[in-house]
Image (cartoon, rainbow, N blue to C red; front, side, top):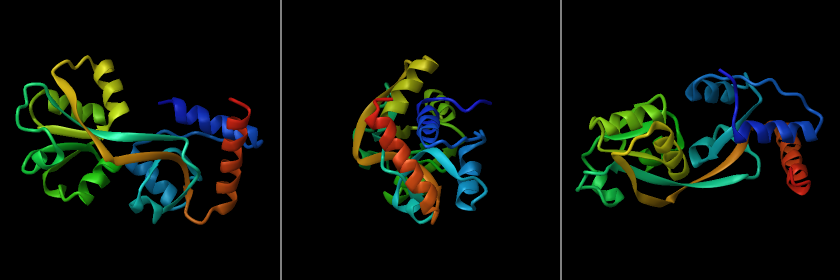
Length: 191
């Protein structure tokens, strides 16, 4: 129920450097993303920049880049590259960049969307999915936290790159400039 983590701390530091107070809101990703698109909220701290999202939002400079991966059960002997996913049930988090990436790659028919990557990993571990497409760093952290020892990162996806940024409602150039300056200040000061 509390906003927490690296991106939240980074947004707080950037806005503090610029003398702005923020009120944080926690809700499901799909809902809060829509609220940003319609201008009901001003900024999201952890948004991957994609061609689809560039139509709805404006983005700060990236503060982190992640690459995607395909996670499978260790006993899977059929999936060794992205083409091997054809015809298999593939888990992604609804509305996540992995969801958008897999749609662009032509896998829409076999995608199974979940509320979270934790849900997708549980389904994979139980044999209800054949693979999960996710950011590699997220996969490694979740597998360790969840204690799932029957799944593994099998394939790195170099063309699935996620540049993480703060996102603002499209056209909010004033806030975008403030956030970019705030990021620059905290980087320059080593915060």
